[in-house]
Length: 192
Ligand SMILES: [Zn+2]
Image (cartoon, rainbow, N blue to C red; front, side, top):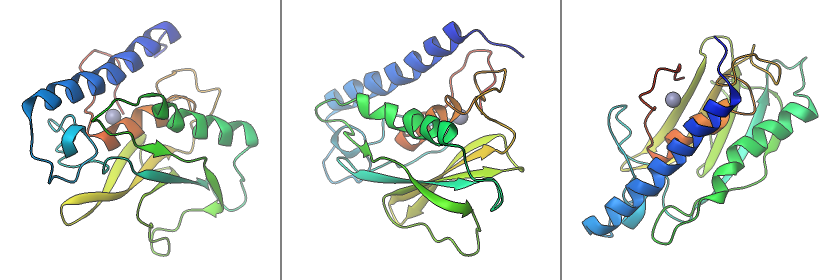
């Protein structure tokens, strides 16, 4: 299914707008400050319907590590840069009292991900290429907060994927939005 780029940018703007709106709403709700999530006053902006109960702590610096499809298929520089830029685009949203999380420049793992070997450090996002899922964000929780996250992207997706929802310069932007507790949009376009 082909979706015009124009529509995608609207979707992304809505996603970003929903973060801002949620932050503002939560700001005036005067939550206590003892919470641990990244949203305003320590609360994640949105929780339902996906059940994201937590998100990043405020003001965290998050490292990004990008794994290759296989050990024999290094991620091209173009794709690496696109993944990096898509995730760090969220750094452009900084609102007083809200998350103010900063994603650092991505680093290369230099190989494929091995779930049994790669314990993810705190304050880190692993970008993992997979043949088992389309696109997914999976938070790694420690007690009451999210300490790290996994962004899964299907190995088939690249910069030439016709549907921009799944193109590699867009999909990670969507998935990392879930790390702020943002749920999928409700319009008719497919939602990884
Ligand atoms: Zn999603």
